[in-house]
Image 1 (spheres, rainbow, N blue to C red):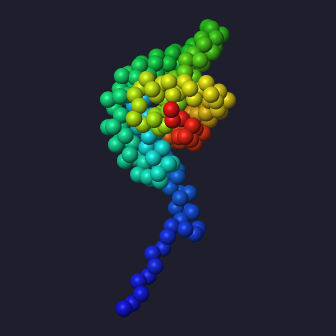
Image 2 (image 1 turned 90 degrees about the horizontal axis):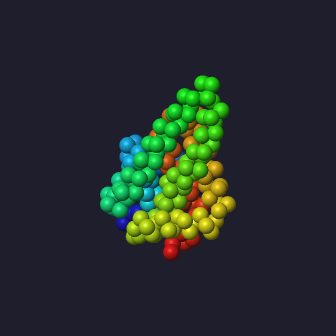
Image 3 (image 1 turned 30 degrees about the vertical axis):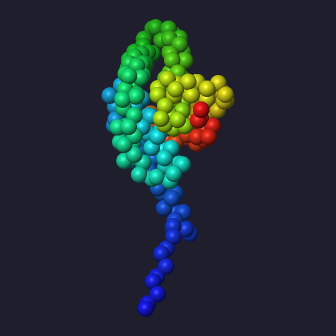
Length: 209
């Protein structure tokens, strides 16, 4: 009886190359799915939560069907996240209108006032960014919780590691600025890359409870 050939394992340079190529590919595919869900803005928060849970499964369990899992996690969490999503969506709409108005004012004699008002919106932008980054991180640490539990968890993360919060916001801002400069990257990485970095900054053991 002929000996069966041994199955090749995913080691060696071939496996390493596939893993290296798979990282940006999975981020891009999952990112574009979440981006399309988030386009109406009121669905941005549910999309971020679903994306974070899918990315956490990939990081923790090796489940690399990230794009498919975004849809599955959206179905699993939609009832818990849509109300908060509406509030976050309204805030995003108001911020978008405000930014567009201020940009239009920069070419007028009232440009100085526009700069001052623009500075006043920065804290609001930071709060919304924290909600879209830290709450999904808290969700990944406590998948069975509710929105109140996740909000408390996110607040706890911010209180315990303020410098890490600043770093997370800085990286998120850098990604956002890159996507503004290169708009074709936005659908693929605007949501997925900041969330992936945030999840890696806060391992699940430090977010649970």
